[in-house]
Image (cartoon, rainbow, N blue to C red; front, side, top):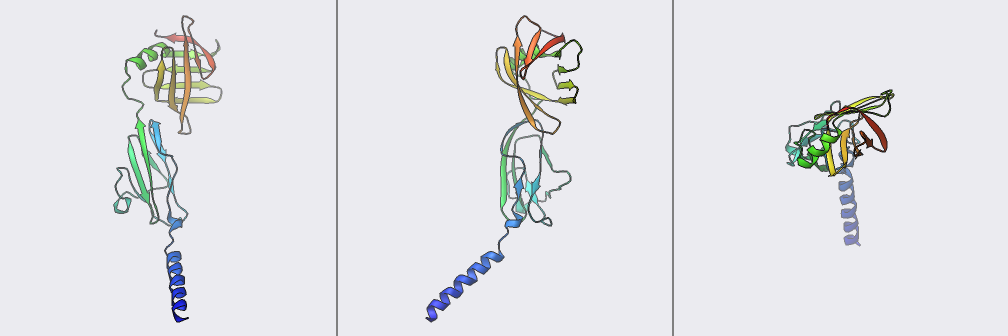
Length: 200
C-alpha cells in the first residue's frame, strides 16, 4: 500500500512539474511559410504571451544565443536566402527561404522574351488600363490605382512565360503572359493588351 501511494505521489508530482514548465504560450509563430520567393519578403513573428521577448537568427544558428530582438512594429525584411530561427523561451520555430532577387541577371531565354514584352501596352485606345515593362520594373495602371514592382520571368517557353511580381500588399503574384506573333498584342493573365510603344 505504501509503495502504491508513493508511486502515485511521484506521478502527480511529475505531472505538476510538467504543467508548471509548459511554455506553450511562448511558442513562436512565423507568418511566412517556408519556400521559394521572389524579391524582398516581409515576415512577422508572434506568440500568445504579449510580454515575451522574441529573439531570432537568419543564418540557422541558435536563437537563444542571439542578440537580434524582434520588433513587432517593423517586422523582418529578408531579400536573400535565409534560415530563420526564432524563440521566446518556448519552442524554436524555424523556416528556410530561398529568395530570388528581382534584379537577378536574365539568361538568354529570359532576355529574348523580355525583348518581346518591353514597352507600354494598353487594353484599349483610351489607355485607362496599362501594362508597362522596363528592364527593372513592371507597372500596372488602371482605375483602381497603380502597382509598380520589380519582377522575375520564369517558365519561359518561346512566346509564353510567367511573370512574378509583388503586389501592393507585399505578396508575390504570378501571372501568365503570351505574346501573339505579328499582331502587336500580348495577353496578360487572360487580358489582351495592344502595343502603345515597344522595342521588338
